[in-house]
Length: 388
Image (cartoon, rainbow, N blue to C red; front, side, top):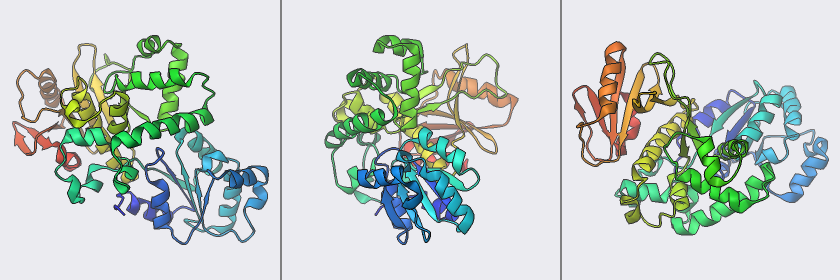
């Protein structure tokens, strides 16, 4: 089993809270992980229709008076159980007694916040990160195009499944099950087309009007579907950074996919060679680098603190990490480093004159070095951004 970086955070917080809640996309490895960390816990999945019916129809008897430690998988299907978990944990005062998982963040988080406020730590488990896969010898020599095309879902690596044999069924299952459970979407083909249109906007500002027009739906429907894709961890929105720089900022978020392999499938990219010349190669590279940073933060049980900047004068910074200091990050897919004709780098230089910031360029090459006040980082060492 490939070690998940988030393990230490889960174990640490299970010693402090009676309930641990883990959300994340379907097939991100939640069940495998919690069963390995808590082998003594009784495992119950709400995906089982018989178990679900029993829990829904008679939740009081679902838990016995001697209820011990339990893993409740996909608990969002039976949210009424959470109030009973509240009563049990208040009575028993046992840390780590219940481990809850769910693949629908908004549905689960809303119920958790209502019933288990102050009693649970909520963590997010996304698919593998490069740091988790780097010890696997077979994958160390992969190009970033191969990583972008393959994606990071654990089952592909565990079962040696090729992307072409994974993503069509993954997406079909997602649409047929998760989407229908959350929203009554009458035309699933139209929804599928909408998701493909989103893939074509990877790394771009989210324009609801344009997206709705291209999809043949209303703006309100587009907003609802984007929220649905966020809730089920298909999409990830990065919001603009508005402190200190300027009041004339663009307020729209940027759209990214949680996994570039799924985005590549939706874009009909069929192999890494096609990726090398695809018009969205740079956007997908930016997508992968930003998600690597977000995975790292989530694995530490910390908020992402990842933003971007764009103003009305088209000045732009790809990524801003807000830690003790601000780290301004430009992301370039080119394998050779060059600062020629880079308006964004000149803008960063102007920003850095007025306030202390750390300047980083992440690029598609193999070597990391310093250059005129910038830390130039190879994509392979993306997490060293946090060490700057």
